[in-house]
Image (cartoon, rainbow, N blue to C red; front, side, top):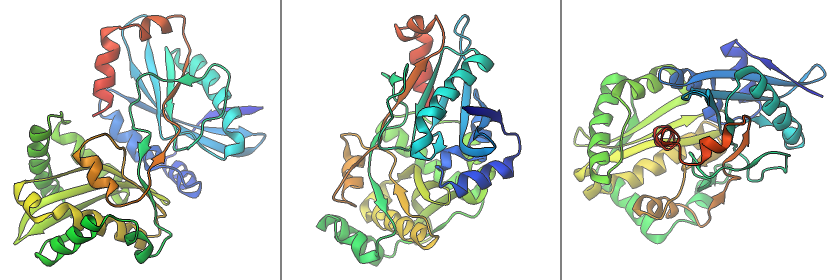
Length: 324
């Protein structure tokens, strides 16, 4: 019998996440960042007898009455495969009894989802399941070999052109990156959070936030922002200006991030999703494969669940907000 208990000690939580090779979106700091907005983060440990066998950071968001709220688990729970089914069953009971939400949605960092009674594929995914994950335990040559010829050429071209890549040091660097990100969002037509959200990520995640910046002749031209845990590097955001595009700065920028995280002992580099667009084609140039994660699954927890799924305007608005 799995028993679920709350965890309120941040350092204990992160130590367990890192030891279990959990995803950076399950780190305490990520929940703290999300809690600065409309979410509330709760962390729970799963015990089998007296042994901790899993953990899960749950993000809770209020919804209009009578729905009460939604529970969302990004890239969790964190547990061994043999315990997944039992933990999902116990987690759903715990969330229903404690929070009374309309549904719990999980998007685990797994390639397969066990068959668990009541759980079904969610029609509204938040994180993309189709992605590229590089195995950083390979040698540098083994990482280069599957790349497209054009990708290798542009890596050399941008490096030889004088583009310099380094890590951001302070909020001034963050501000410079956000100026480029705003240009990128206007060009590509997507919305951004307030500046304070990105500042929170930089400050709250600390060493688990790694912001790579590319400069040319002293001018910032591109950036790539990662969240990292002990095992996984996960791309959060990226952008470049017109000068960066001309210099192909994004090529040496990504390659440097890959090599640096490899040096840190990280073994998985997740490019955070593929669509059928130019950015995805750029990502695909760094590998000869794709990775298909399990995807988005949910379990209804309320008699109001059909009302939630059948076109409630707030539901669609919420999904758009969550995806930012």
